[in-house]
Image (tube, rainbow, N blue to C red; front, top):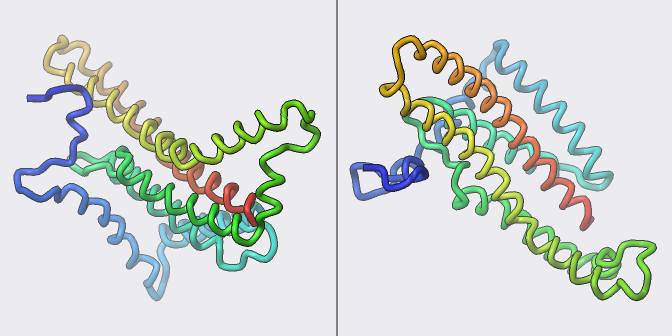
Length: 223
């Protein structure tokens, strides 16, 4: 019996091991497409997306960061595949849990902060006080900027998890009303579910892109 609305997202199985998390490795079935001798349309389309992302991340990161775009493109691909696979029936959505999103956001942010404070200490200190701040407001701005830097991994993780779980929860609630509504309303319910599925597909793309872009912006600030 479902205890609350969010218990349907619990990673529980009939065994004693949380094997639902293994569904996060299903994206690996798409990798062999890139090794075909004659690429198909899907692999060519995906390569065009990766090239476009490489150019955009290269612009955001600036010069002198060769190879850094691969890190953010890989994170974008991982989140995108997990978001899309979570829309299929009976596949666990790992990105709707803070366990995964914090695991992605916290190491990135921590590595950026350690690198910035070790190599660009003066710049990091100057960044705490925006240019043109009155002397009277400088102590408050230091506190505000420090808090805003500390909560960055939390905002990244919560944004992704909340956006993914919100749509899934709405689809779950509408799906549970199926047996209780008249037969004449079934087609309206199916139409609404299809529209929500299209919306969730767009959210899956947007949220993975936002996560990767914000991470690259945080990296460009310390370099």
